[in-house]
Image 1 (cartoon, rainbow, N blue to C red):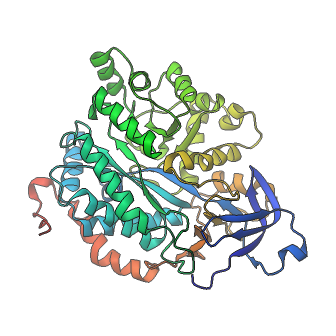
Image 2: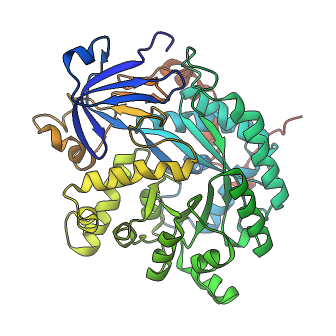
Image 3: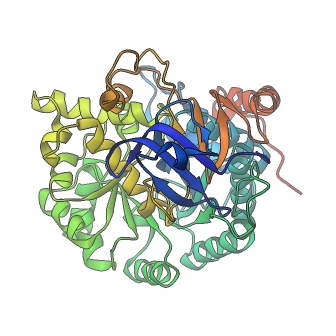
Length: 479
C-alpha cells in the first residue's frame, strides 16, 4: 500500500534454515531485502512496525496449468475416460479467450496467494487453433497476476504430440522475447506498491517451456538450449511422467527420456525437469551432476495415479527441487509437502523420511528449505530465503491459529505442515508489498472486486466446462 512500512519487526522469523528471534526486516525501495537483523535490541527495533505472527519466506509454485483449474472436480467419476479429459483440455485451450483466461487465472492466483505461494510459473502452450495470439494470452495472465499481486514466470511452451502439433522453435523464441520486452519490462513492482521504484524487483518474466521430448528434434533442442544459455532464461520440460513415455522413448531412441535429454541438450542449472516421476537411479544421479532441478507435483501425480518420484534419493545427493500444483486439485504448499512426505512414509513403512534422507532433525525444515531454495531455478529470479538482495516475498502465520496453540516456537513449522489441514496465512507480502491482510486480498483485485469477477466471469467459464465439446456453443474469436 502507499503508506506501508518498509521496516518490520517480528518475534520469530525463519532465517538461514532455523527460527530466529526478534528479527528486524528492512525492505529497500526496489522491493528486495535491504537488511535482516536477528536478535535485535530494543533500540534497533525502534521505528519498526510489528508483524502479528511468525514470518516465513514465500514459496514458488513451480508448475501451473491455469486451465486445469477449470476442470478441478470434473474428472473424479468412474468411467471418465482419458479421451474425454483430453477432449476437454484441447477444447478449452483452443476456445478460451483472453478475457476468460484472465478471469480463471485471477481466481486461481488469488487462491494460490492465500495458500502461501508468492510466485507462480505458468505453462502457456502455443496452439495454432487458439482463440487469440500467444502474446494476448500472456498479457491476460500478466494482468491477472498483477491484479492480485503474485509474481509470475510465463513459460510459452511447444506443445507435445497430444496437442495440436509442435509450434516452430522460432515462434516460441519470438513469443518469449516479446513477453520479456512488452510485458515484463513494464511490470517491475507490484501494482499495490505505488511508492516503489520503477527499477524494482521484477514480478513478471518469461522462460522457455517444452511439453515433452516429442516437441523438438535434436537440432531444435540445441537451438532452444543455446537461446536459454544466451539469455539466462529458465527452461522447463515435462519428462518421464508415465511409464509409457519411458517405453516410447526407449523404442524410438534406445535411451530413456532423461538419459536422452542429458546426451542431446546442454542441461545445466537453468533446467527444470517437471515430474521426472519414472527416472532411473542413474538418471537421478546424472540430473544432480548436471545441476538441473526437478519440479515435483505431489497432488497432481496422486490425483492421476502417475507414480512417485524418488525424491529421497535425489535429496540424499543434494539435488535441487521445487513443487508445483499443476492440475490445482490442491492450492497450498503445506498440503503439497504433507502429501509428499506421507506418500514416502506409506511406501517405506517409516516416519520422517525427508529428515532421514537429509540427515537433519526436522522433516518440515528439510522440505520447506528445499522448496524455498528451488524457487530461483524455477523462476530465473532472485527469490527464495530471507536474505539481503533477494526479493522480499514473505508470509505471516496466524499465531492464534488452532494448529499453533500451546506449541513451542521451534515446532511451528512442523505444525504448519503436519497439523494444519486447512493452513492459511494471516498476511502475504510480495516484493515488500502486502497483498493479503488478515486473510483477505488487498490488491487491486481485492476480495470485493474478486467476488464481482467470480460472478460475472469465472463462474460462467467454469459452467461451460460442464458441456462436452460436441455440444458447446462457439466462443466468438477476437476481431
